[in-house]
Image: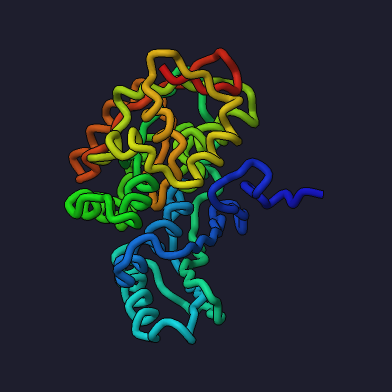
Length: 314
């Protein structure tokens, strides 16, 4: 039997759970952790925090408290590595005005770090991933390509200046984008992470089968060198898994280059928000985001009536 106070749970692949406490207060809960994607432990800590907080921002919530989740190979790594990770994480939490209240660590042969996060929201103001309406514009707030760039980094094939750009993006909070989204009034939102742009877009439209989505690759922002690396076949394994899992829901026109399709399935780390917003509000929302420093915010598609439950790339 479903709890009547549960506003959002795992049944619709929401970014976070939302539970109503009173008529005007609900809590937002999530957790996320992963293995290092950059060599610098301090930056890794910041990225992990930004990534975890993003789930609360995607729901339109305000994160308040967090707890660290750590798996650490104490026999093979110096404890100073963990100290730097936690310092970086704490710095990002302070920036987000989120209080660290504890955590838990275990010995693990593979280093892992992340957080559980609790936030708050008014029960009537929850932005789910399933509310897209015909006529909405689709907005993306960060470029694509983190999976490809990070894969190239592991092979010493990523230019240092590009790595810096991608890292800067991954440590950037989605806080301001979420605030502008709430002020503007969005129909639906999710954040783009491990399932890639198409994977998370599918979560917005496939299960409901009420609407369809068109994506316009010409307006999608990509990180520098993403095209060249994708053409070279520098793709993470997750991109292939994402494609195999969701390709049945995607219609790709023949004029779309193969490298673009690869990037659309590229798993992102601490990616941007993917927002469906009424058409008449979209330009204003993007303008406000760019003026606030979210310089890559772009309208990348629209919600259509047909074909229902499908994403058309054209």
